[in-house]
Image 1 (cartoon, helix red, strand yellow):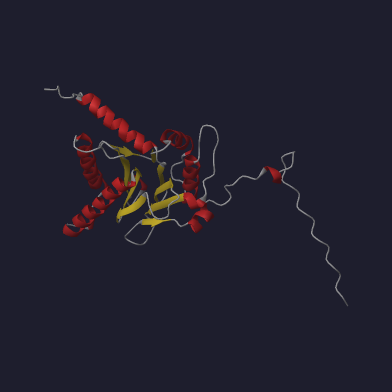
Image 2: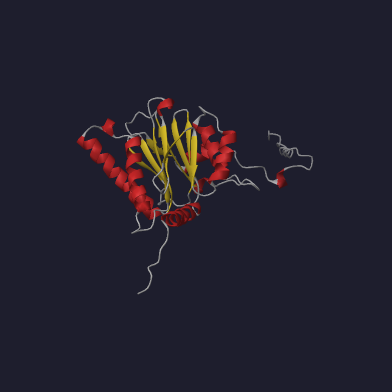
Length: 260
C-alpha cells in the first residue's frame, strides 16, 4: 500500500495564495479615487464589451481585476443580493458594507476549500454618501480579506507603482477633471518612462452624488473624456526649435486689393 501524499496546511495555503496573486498581477490596474463629488474609477481596458467597473445598486459600484468569468459571477450575485434585499426590506438597507461582507464570506470559503481553485480576483465595493466624509471604498482580496480604503486605492497589475504615484500627487477635494488626470497619469506611470494612454483604451465611471437621479452611477463616454483630458499630449520634437521655443507662426498670405 502506497503512502498518501501529504502537504502541510501552511504550504497548501501559500501555494494557493501565490497562484491567485500571479493571476491577478497579469491583468491591468484599476484605480478608485475619491474626489469632491464622489468616487472615480479608472482602468486601462481596450474592450468596449467586457467591463471591469459596473453598477450594483443606487449608490454602490463594483470594480474588479483578474479572471473575467470569476468576477462577473461575483458581480451578478451582488446585483441579485442587493435587489432582493432592497425589495424585501428597504432600498436604504442595501449598503456597501453589507455587500463587502457577503463577498468576503464567499471568497474566503472558496480560498480555504480544497475542492476547487481559489478565485483569481480582487474587488472594490464603493458607496457614496450625502457628504464626502460618508464615502466608503472596500477592497477585497482573493482570500476574503477586507480593507477599508481612504482617499484612493489601486489593485491589479503594477499596483505598487501606481499607488506610489498617487501617494505623491493625490489632492483631497479635487475636481473630477483633476482627479481623472491624476488617475490616468498614474496608470501610465512606470519607473523608466511615462506613457500616454489613449482615450479609447480607458474605462471610466463615477459615483456622482450631485446627480438628481436616485442612481448615482455613470459611465464617462470617450467624447467627454476627450474634453476632460484634452491637452495631455506632449509636443513632438519636430515642432520645437533647438532653443526649446515653440515654432514661429507662419506669416499670413497677402490679401489682394479689392477690384474696383
